[in-house]
Image 1 (cartoon, rainbow, N blue to C red):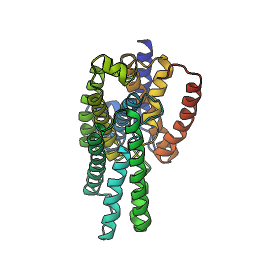
Image 2: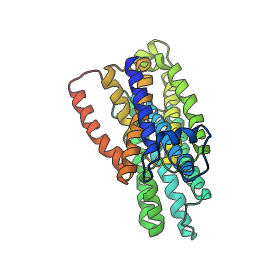
Image 3: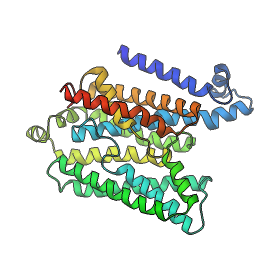
Image 4: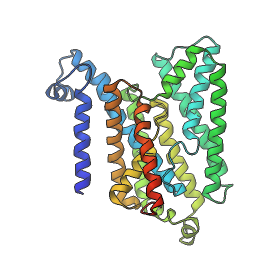
Length: 333
């Protein structure tokens, strides 16, 4: 309990830093007045309500969603190196955006900075993710074990990546630039309505994960053991694909393909608690996900570099740590 309280307190401190730090320094007292509806309508209020607050909330919710998504993938494959992109779902979102931007360029439309442009990119990403997820759900029942599904997902991801490469090679310079900028990831492109949509998907998904914690623990013991206890492994596999895919899809749609958070955060939670028990890890994954998102956003914003540069630099050492931990045969699956 003390650990959870400490993580929550650190997350609140990080939120305050996100709200106060920037090109314009705003005192915490002024921010508190604005958030309570006592603002004066000046520039500070515009900065807080239209820029910093949406970015801070998005960094928290999107990172929690990615963390839960990666956690479910790691449970499905009983492998701490699995992440939201393992089945090509994030790749499907990237393909949807690539098709939109690069096909639009052929028709002479290359600007996606307007509200309509932002919505169209989000819609394309969601459709791309849902298309891949529908294919995975369709074929998941054809495979007898999770390893075959994993190989199928990896091959599907490579196939989607090949199509993206062809589109990038054939498109215009302006369209390619728009696609690359989207691919760098950002928490700063959302509004309150989009944040509410992310929250409306995140809350029920998190509730299902919490309620299924005992079944998820059983799945970690292997398919044969789960079947011996009466668990329908194929049905649970479809559920995990759906939950992970939906969470990854909505985040990728509005924030771009953000790397490593979904892989790294569950690892950190297991490292702190030295267990793989879902009931014990649940709130740690959520709070650590929020904190990693907040720290990544702060660094990216203050250093003025792409978000994915921060998450990748943070995630690569985590992968090495996982490999070293696995070699010692400790608490990992």
